Length: 256
Image (cartoon, rainbow, N blue to C red; front, top):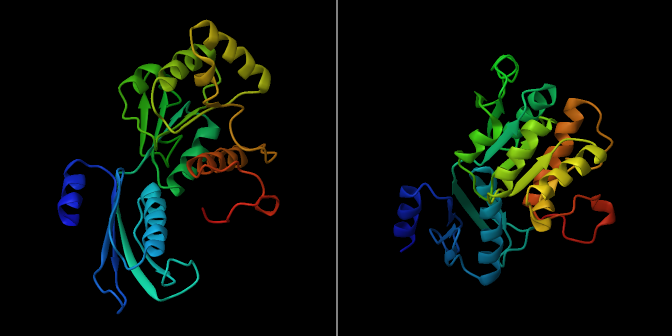
């Protein structure tokens, strides 16, 4: 059943991970993890739980890894040694606006494992020479591009256009998707005006709350590179269901 489930996921181009135990206790034991849950037994419920969590983390970035755990899934221990294969199409990061901030954001997006697309309606700005780290640079009207793009819960949308003629139609389309992250650049005043326009256009309060704006975590970012780090950190925090504060001041486990 495990290999049938794996084959079905691969045929559907759906994210799936397969963990195989390599140590001498239960050599060859397997656990498969996909969007519907986990199947298999690696030796104990605690180990199954820990490996499932690690498999989902690897799926988020599309990486394979060798991992060791304690007998019951403890993070410190070597009794259980596993190889986790993550079969996942890269998640999409759509960056709207081919500006200096976009160049830095594209670079950070690649480091995070995203397939990065930069979109701008202005051909003079939307060039590979300006954004060399992007997988694609597309000349298109932002809302029209997004309306036909692939969007799923792992998708991150970063709006850097900072222009209402682009932002308002684009954000309306973005909020109609199930994208996991929607961020928009702009000051608090700019975003307040943007919210009023969206509200007047029929966008609900719950949808407005989905917009991360001003975009990024509050780290005092000023340069394009610092701003990209701020945005990337917010994306990771939301992906991990964390608030993004200092670890020193928190009470949750360091590794979720």
